[in-house]
Image (cartoon, rainbow over all chains, first blue to last red):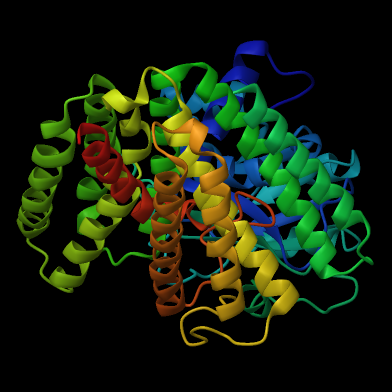
Length: 200
Length: 298
């Protein structure tokens, strides 16, 4: 998890990974349903590749990148030196348990939102094959109800599963698209766990 | 060289002035995005030209990379093809541009393209996945041919003796193809009435084609001092480049229509993707290369 300022080497690695992802996957942001905003938001995206989060961060305007954190699975991102470095030093991440999120971990997310930071969250909980959207985990549902005024922006990432799918080491470059959809929030819409994936 | 830089800078400034006379509309917005992207393109080209042969080789290697990335996104492929696709980007592309940089004509114009033509079907068959095999192979071969092989002919012009250690030869080609594109757009927008082939491209018009190619031919004749040729020869070459450029764009429009996309990507605001900008270059570059080579030898 990241608190306060990040180290210089971490920032360099982060920029390097974002630039590398842009070369391999393109991914200019397409703001179809809303405009970029400084306000705290929750971006929920489909998840098929490790390239997903540098791609979303790269599609955000640079000024928004510095107060946007990625929610990532603690068990996966704490395993191994490289993953640990990427998740703890390079990117702004909040590492949480995959299935039953404890209260303190939940408060890290609401705390970040209360400080005006945005979150990137993959509600499927793990990377899919790219053919179908998997059922959402319930974390996003609780988070949306805990902070009903926060806008939830659906993000659709296309093609990245062909660039670097789960388990692949060598990327096959291919243009991807990152589309930001129309925001929704729990206050105006009675959100159900089932209505969510359909809105993406 | 200074004259070219002043000419292009002047043309872009003039375009900005003309654009500011337009009432605010989506067309005016698109125009200002286009002109802004043009400044970036011109600056990249200027920096590369100052670095000479190595500069243009590196710039076009980058252009090929992004172009092939855009092409691969719509080309047929199966998960089993990932390594073959990666090999096109990380083996074929650097090799082709290294050979162009060295200037070995037989290798970059003959042996490597033929090797790709033979190896891509073999490697794809070795994946063991035969579903859509023919489409996958054809589309990867076409992607490599257009995005790597044909585009590498632009820096390859500097390996010709006629280049005389200057970058004027490729700049003439780029200037004429792009001017022809812009002039076709301008003529088409001002006089638009007859669509040329509405089923392929909604923006190509008969008026645009005639006016654009006519003006580009005249521009080529006026710029004959950039080439080793006479005024009439330079005009005729500019005519050939414009016609080839038109058909290059026409082919790429047909592919976009087939796949139901409007632009190749959003990399160059106002234009679309890199392929939207170089779609007229891939056909005209090899043609121009061999015309110059034949004329300069004769």
